[in-house]
Length: 207
Image 1: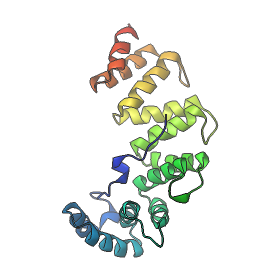
Image 2: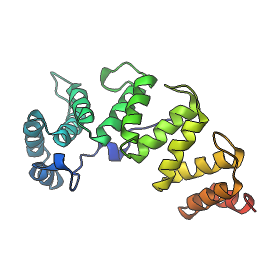
Image 3: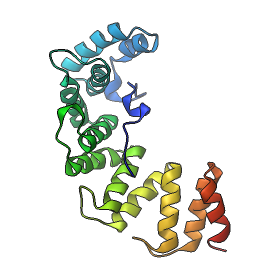
Image 4: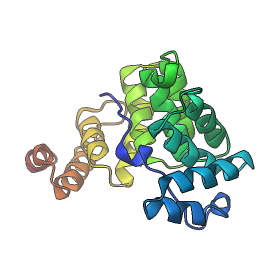
């Protein structure tokens, strides 16, 4: 189960109600209206002033249009944003370490560390990625119990893949006490989101 840097992780974002979103409204409006170059300058100014959300968005814009003199500068800004509490940045940094993006040496240990940072802030893709790291013993000691914890957290956020996986773990007793009723409940949750395999499993498990 490989993690890919999703479109959501690549998009700049505006976090409503977040304290570090203050001052970034104009830059976001410029970007949303197609004025990416102007948005880049606004985000650059805000990023240099220490705004974590601006640092993340600036990193994403630099990643799409890297500087000829500093092609991997986006990673430095991404790290600053992650250190500043932007969960999207922590997840993206984990993916960068997983794949060796931007000249980083591949490191499953660092990938797992940053997935955990983002997962603890409720980033659903990071929860799934962290669970998978534990499930496979990749970048951390293999632990089905820890994998189950994070898959279930992601399942509670309606991630369909996590719902299917935690259902399977309850069905077989992998990392959790076997519980066919819980397995069926999670298969049904995944089935309601269109997972065809889950529809079949829901009919046979727990009955």
